[in-house]
Image (cartoon, rainbow, N blue to C red; front, side):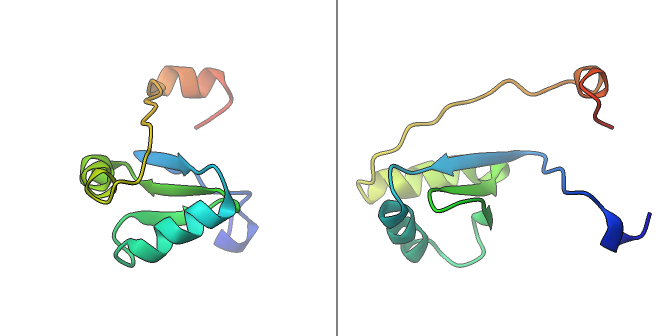
Length: 87
């Protein structure tokens, strides 16, 4: 299937940041080094960030006094993904 006909993207090893409001996320994005953490903006309040950078990002937010909460979700095994209709 040509790339132009793909139905979507599967991101692995990522984390989500979901902010209370659009304004809070805009402020957060303005304070982050460009291209270091953010992979994609999903909505007015949510971004995908590099999961490998979770610790660095957490330290940065804590130093700046920006309140946040980390919620870790269990990773799916390849078998669980196949059973759910994934690759």
